[in-house]
Each structure stands twice: as C-alpha cells, then as structure tokens.
Length: 389
Image: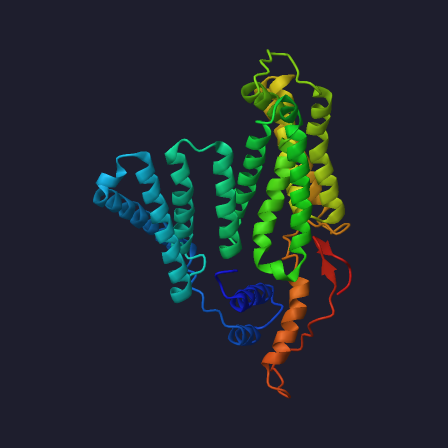
C-alpha cells in the first residue's frame, strides 16, 4: 500500500539510528560507513532550505497551471460545476505526477512531493465546497476518506491529523442533526470516540507492520488526547452550545451539568500528567502540561480573581521557581527522570540491532582496528534507563 519501498524505509531508519549512535560516540566512523554501505538508501531528500524552496516552487507551478487551464477552458467554467470538475481533474493530475516522481525520481519528503500531495488533496476536496449544495457531513466524510487513503499511501503525519479531525467533524455534523437528545450527548460521544482512537493508535503502533506509520499514529494520539479534553472543557461546551444549539445563555448562566464539566476541565490534565509520569509516556506528559494552561484560561474567563497583569506576573514567577527547583532536583537522575538532554528512547534497543548489523557487515575473522567497545546486552525502555547496562 505504501508508495515507498519498505526495505528502503527500514534502511533509512537504520542509517538514522547509526548516525545518532555516531554522534554519541557509541560507534566509530568506519563502523558507521560499513552500516551505511550495507543498507543503502536511494531516496532524494534535500536539506530543509532546498526543501522549502522546492515546495514553494511547486505550489507556484500548480497555481499557474490551474490558471492556464482555467483560461483554456473558459467556456466550461461558466458555472460552479464546471470549475469543480476542473479542480478534480487538476487534483488527479497532481496525484499522477506525484506517483511518477516517487517511482522514477525517488522523492521522499523532498518538498516537491509534499506540495503535489497537498495540492491533489486540496483541489479534490475543495471541489465540493465550490459546488455549494453539498452538506457539511458529506464534505467531512469525503475529506476523511481521501486523507485516510493518502495517509495509507504516503504515511504523512499531517494528513493523518487532518483525517482524524475530518472523521470527528463527520460524527459531529451527523449527531447534531438527530435532535435535541443527540445534541446533549455530543460531548460524551466525542469523548468516547477520542479515547477509543487513542487506545487503538497505541495498540496499532505496537505492531511491527505499522512501523512506517509511527509518526502518523503519534500525531493521532496527541490529537485524540486534545479532543478528549476539549469535548468536556467547560468553555468549549458552553460556547459551542450557545452558538450552535441556541441555548441563549446570558452572562453568568451555566449549562446543564456545569459541575461535571468544571470538574472534568480541572481533572483531566492532571490525570494526563500522572499517567505520563507513571508510564514514562512523553505524549501524555507534554499534552498534560499544555492543557494546564487551558485550565487557567477557562477559570479566568468566567471567574476573574486578579487583574490580568498581576495574574501573569504571579504565574510567571511560579513557573520560573518551579522550573528552577525541578532542574536542581533532577540534576541527578531520579526514578527514571533527568534534567540532562534525553537520548533517543529507542537508542539502546537500536544499538543491539546495529551490533547484529555490524557483525554481518564485517568479513568473518576480520578484527576491526582500535575498537574494543562491546555492544549489546543493554536494557532500557520508555523515557529513562532501567539501571542495567
């Protein structure tokens, strides 16, 4: 299903891990060269500056090409359906060129392929908006289908995030059409879907066959945690209900079940932090830290205790003192946490893989000069070392 060669993607990951090991002086330069030669990668991936330039250039070419097609088919574009058809045609052309470039030019995250992929998706999906008489639920469903197929084909994490949000948008637009009862349970429905998607993403990421989609699954996990919280955040529930469901709440009035949503708003980020610390899960930990700000914003929006400037100064002081104390406390690693710059979480396991690769790379009986380091046998996982080396 992937547009890229699976073995080449594996080789690319091995080279990246070998480069990390080289930077940490875990392997020598000759060893790194041997790994690189044993696992060749023929992808074209330029540096970020060239990649951005190629992306912009491709976007300009797509725009001018679409304008030229519009001028050539002026008679066909006198109505919305004609222009929508032209957008679909242009999107399919972009997709066809993308497939050819990947197969023939071996492009991989090169800027050109990114622009063609996004151009194809935007052109195809925007055609429905141009028509105008298509419902929002249908638009969300089509966007979800197109982006899911694109994710499976090209393993782009940003498109995976769009697919998840489009799926939630489809569920939301369908639910609000089912009557007052459905509108009442929409927050709980979004919560259920979010936690289900998060659990599914974590389980799928554990399978070896999904290794090339790990970044896609990570972004989906982060978004599912965010939507799980936002679905029960008091500010979101109250304001969305007021704007879309015509509750007509006045200032100071609360929504039904306000106590539950206030507790949910304050507790969920703390739960994320607790689970992130306990499981050494950086996704949960960082998401919980971000959502702490959402607690403060929500409470202050409805209950102003101090002037804004005073609250910001006090909050800054508390964060600064807390960060300073935490840095001092974690200068020596404690309970699997440290202030020191973290190494790649999977580096210890990858080094064991690299030791096997190195053993296969050298000729039997050959002795590498000046290298007395013995690899393998280490144990570690998660966000910190386990104590065995």
